[in-house]
Length: 416
Image 1 (cartoon, rainbow, N blue to C red):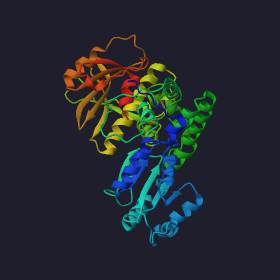
Image 2: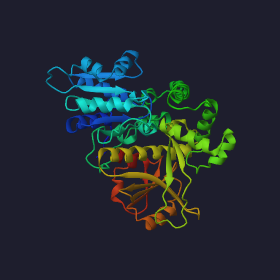
Image 3: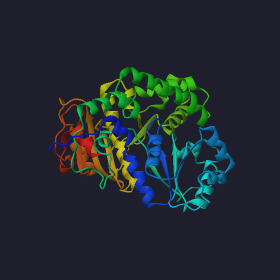
Image 4: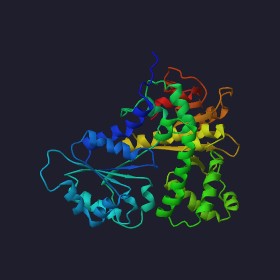
């Protein structure tokens, strides 16, 4: 029987997979829960939806002046607003949004958590990676769990329930309308819901301005904003290619060291992500050059590059969710050797090769011989050539262990 996703676009965006993950965490764990991901990906909307389920819900945003004043006063001001010194019939939910912009955020959270973890469930959301704030402050080790919050994906559109296993054994068909909107307008909720080119263009321009005129200014020491914008634009045209820092440095007119630092800043603010080569047990492998992909694949005009980025984003979301949810330790690589053999992606599970994935836009390409070669070399259980334009097939891709061509609509529906 063919299963169809019946939810509307708006329903999907309001009922995110991460909502189920948050509920499970609140019920099972006492640690703080950190939700980190790009601007406008749905973190705040998802957290605010908790107010419908929980009697006591409090939201404090560093970007709100009144909330910021309370945070600066210290934990006692929050305690007074929430009423933590009074008898309550259930734990309140307290959300701190964008608090990483506060220079002493670690000490604030550490002190608040150590004093009140048994009286409240604490959520922390932010639009920058936590590891750019390693310096200074006491460690939060053991005091939080993390979910990395991603844009919508095929798997999340067809099923927003918390998974019991890594992959769905039964694929679910995504509607052509939803798939086309996801492909053309990306997985950020607003443009996905609107599915309108003019809205997408306006939204994209505003998001780009916020990144470079607000986030870069507030969270980094980079002064050469215009040159950084040039670098960001160049990366759009290098998706899936091995990165030459020196070549980029010549085009942007800065040093290679500066290019590395700037790309790291763009990564920390969720503009792009890095995939490095896998070299273990690969003779004559490439050991250094990473590839970069965008968090918003809809910004990529070249359709072949967009196809590769589309699948890369789905894989990154899946491996990070599986890791964050405790299914194991997963990572994402590409494979290329000096004999020019290459496979787009390798997913490892607990440091062992598991999935090989080659991406094609069209079904008119024969299966890549590199899949069979690298499956033998790495011992990966599965080797898939994922094709964007193939129709959905009601079969479990993961039943196959031989190299095989599979529809993106089927394969991606089995991921997160």
